[in-house]
Length: 79
Picture 1 (cartoon, rainbow, N blue to C red):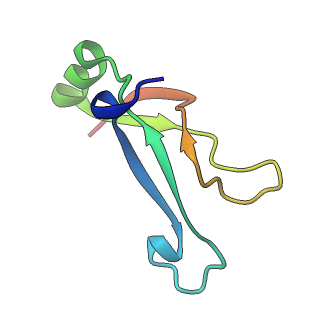
Picture 2 (picture 1 turned 90 degrees about the vertical axis):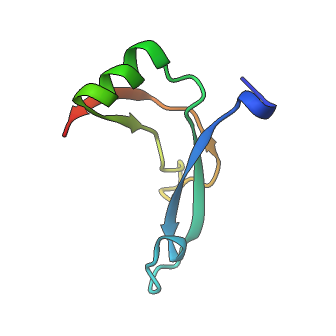
């Protein structure tokens, strides 16, 4: 796992942090993106669409995950 200046991630807000005032949740996931293959994925996304990243965002008890998550998959989706 990368640390420091080479580690990059995006936030996914959940519940109140995502603007849902009625939610019982107020959480945030950090999704690692430092390992995206810049030659293949970023180049394809620039010319063809966007990078879609899949994560497991649910805890074993069914609640939203609040952690740093490793992607379970990535693909290019057309614009």
